[in-house]
Image (cartoon, rainbow, N blue to C red):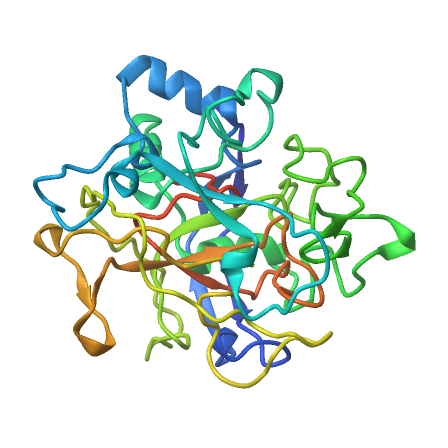
Length: 347
């Protein structure tokens, strides 16, 4: 299991008004002391959990045709969403151009059935849903962090700054995190030799001594997503854990997003939308019988949580979210090739 770092209690300025609307309003939050994994959970660490428990991830579970008689057989197969680069420049308003539903893709076959994690044991585990991450955390005697805990740890208690390490993206010309290098979504020149996920710890630690808080993979939190921060009336109130994990099944399809922006600058109009994390916020939707939220138009969709940290797919021209204040919605049941997690524990 990853070593853990003690994050001392304190108050910090949460959010930002400089980038995307969903990051506001800026407000003061207090966080009690807690422990946080020094790096995201790796493939080898997740494999130990699966070997010990026999756990089957959401991406490995086919759907019951009796529950979904309207679906063709190919949509009942287990699988996950995989990023596939385009052959050249494309408009950035349709994520389906670079995301593909791949039957057989899952945590130990990250690029599809013919791939395997044996050659990447120290890379962060991917294709894990909120349920999967929560199950691992419970097995490890830990939990997932809240959004406020995660952002507080990423800032290092040093007050607001654009990046986890300071105000410059590449201080002294140094690459500090694994984010997209080149032109999204067709040309990635790689960061320190990695065009996809990188081994944990391949980039410098931040001011809290944590690795990969920014870039590499998005990370689950327990915080339900809202279009803006819900500011507590008592800003000194400690962050508390919400949540009871609900087992969710899934079905390919789900809500469709429109992307963030086709310009070189991050959009400041409208809400985050489904393109926030350089991909869909829902690749599968839970059946209504398992408890879902009602979306607009009467479409039933799973709850969404806040993701933090950005990923190796975040690029300045599309998803400038490799920052502590950045946040993105993700359906509880969705597993993709750029989402992982790390665990927390009460101090």
